[in-house]
Image (cartoon, rainbow over all chains, first blue to last red; front, side, top):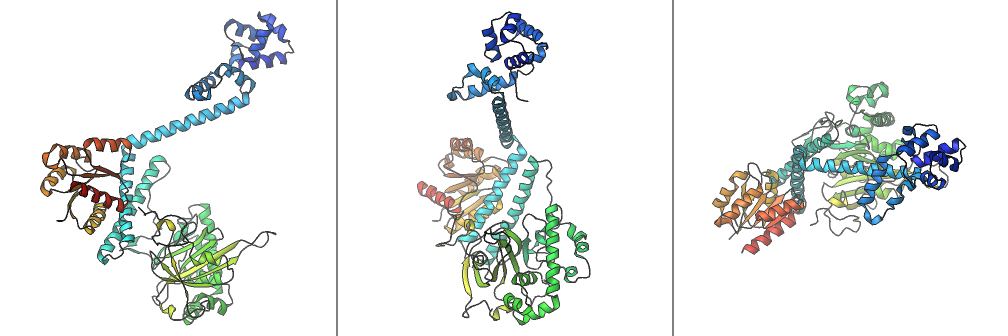
Length: 461
Length: 124
């Protein structure tokens, strides 16, 4: 209910009793014009007059006065004093509240919210400056960031380092990054008691700079919004290779339930596992390995050989066993037409974005303008190793009349220099593969004279 | 003769990066990680420039500056303070204590080297 001041309440009660203004005025001993001012909240009501009005209107004085929000009035006065330049008409504040109770309540609500936010900010600021834990945590984080930034800048700008020196700097960055992540978690926990600082046992730990576990050279892999599930994409799962065990039973195993800590993660796990099973049945493991070796792991040729669509072959090649050194390891990136990352399996040779777009020069983005046509290209990343990439885009939706279809694109890639490089690809034209100099993201790409740069290099001093 | 720089910093990875940058400039570096020993190390190493962290174990960077400025031998040695405390009052306190220059962490390597070069040139 909208707020009412005493005057407004007097008027409403009088009208409810079908009493004339002049009659009520006379019975309480005031003039009709004075009562009119009261009813328009232009004159205060208190003491004997309040008691007399309450008696005539058949309510208690408390009831008559109960909606007069003195706190609101005080807040309005304080606000007006804080901003004198607004020249708020304080002498008419009662009239304002009485005539526009809804607006008054709205304004009061905004004032209270602003005050609450100001209190929160002041409290946080105070915490930052005086809470020893927060202060020290922030100091340590800034120290970590300083070490990472300076060392990374050296690695980027002073390329000709001795191997031992480079390895030491790499190790320093790794250690500082781990400390920074830990401190960031602690900082978060300091603000939100529901957050607990944990290390995720599902994440592969680095040993001597290499990812451990059965993920081979996979540094990380991902699916958007499912950080835990991230490490499943690209994983070889023998149970999903055949149709003997239902997919639902497989993903109910502890090995997988670790990754389903949210409904979204569970949905993605189900989607990924179902896709894996479907692809595995279409391209059985033994057969695909033999055929792929014969065709030098060229996915476009394999798609033609098996009469399968290219994304199916890409997915298959990204989910092969990792214990066969003679087979190349493939990374995989799947995106939608807004460049949002849907699937992600990263190799050490080329970093992949986790959520959205990377370097616009990457062929996967160019593929979106050339659907259904494979692009094979050799990528020379500024901060990685040369890779052979295969990109392909396709339409996913046709039913929205009048709109262009939604698209998806995939990029399969492997480190260049493997046995598979000895042969060409059908998508490779005139015997020379496309060669593209690429970065990861403009902000961390030191490549100069790049016409496609959309953001300044962050380390430019 | 190569310039001598004393790096008073307790974070070893920052020290390693800064020392790498300075040595590439041909400068000789000495490192001290303990605030309580910094003043003595200044006496023994006689640096041309001191790179000083603000928050050090056992003694703060500000206290070190005050002490150094009271000594005849180190009154004029340029001091570049590196600190994660970048508020105006921290800068003011450092200036009042007698630092020659002040940079907040994280810093750009190029800026650090340039500032060190500038301070060394001023001293010369």
